[in-house]
Length: 394
Length: 95
Image 1: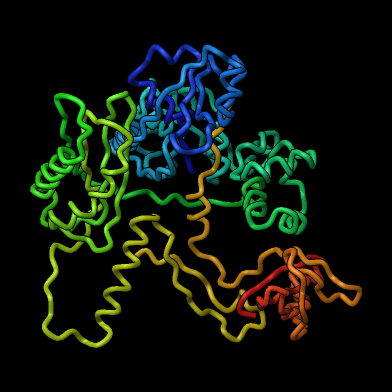
Image 2 (image 1 turned 135 degrees about the horizontal axis):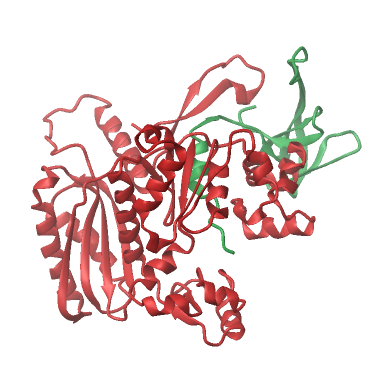
């Protein structure tokens, strides 16, 4: 069976760790600076007062004047989520994280270890920790597992037996489906409010009216997609932190701090002389929030000066003075060095550059982003039967 | 109650093996003779070619398509077909 662990409002919970007193008061995650003024997840007290996630800031404050706004803490959320995923991996569960607060795993690998599906789910919930109020769901398909986890109560697991997925999904709200707001409103105007309402429509009508996204949502609503979990390969943590005695906003000092962090990171024995492909620079801000930027390198390398030049522009994006700076090697290349050749064979350089470009795309967008076309029936009269698109991960 | 909805990565995973040049739903307004007048809200300048594909009539999923290669008013070339079995329009590359 496929299982899903969900922590609703994860980003808010992560930000509230620094201000736990707000957890029982009306509070919401403040909008991100420079983006549309929409609030993020809200606490139960705020929800009881009529505030909804995604509401406009002005409307939310008018609805609940005592609403406290919590600064987003992206670096803290990233770190907390990584810790949770590692705890799950420590108990033997191969996890596929799909964003902060949501992860899938296949129970088959651990069922015998923990005495069945329920035992595996209980162990996974315990590994996440009760302070996060995690919920677990299990079903034959990913979407049904996700829906079950959303329906379960905090700290509980809900298992949807095989063959009952469509009956289970039918009464659930359409919000669970990955549709944009405009499409959802369109469906509401047509009188569709439940997953079952959409699933009952004919496929051709859905495809014609709602396009490819609607067709995907229709497939999910019928519980017909997603049988596989692609567990991540746990990476060794390679990060360095520099805490400042007082807040630093001076760019020169920050550049020097980055140099120190780079020196320390490159000297770590765990790196084993491998080149760096992706870096993450994060900072704890003086006001209590945090900041994080990732950098995928065009060519993996371990030269301090090149990495310093690449990280320079990111420092200019810091929104304010910082009290701590953290540099993390998110992904390392397999190669340990590059030997230049006197005469390169024809085509070899081009193939090398292409391979490097594809690895860069994969590092920045994740698995499944690069595909290759495989001809299977070039004689077919139907164009879509002639070739397949197959993910090219290596 | 707030819900965590299916993430784009799910869709990405589902895309791992797919068909190349798969038909996509198209919004087509047709003339009396069945040829397209507007494709995805763009006017059709003229129809370059028209052909028909009838296949797999011996199976449960027969194919009956009326293809049109058109030039839009914007100068863009497009290939659309009407699926006579399902009664809806699609656009397709590689036809």
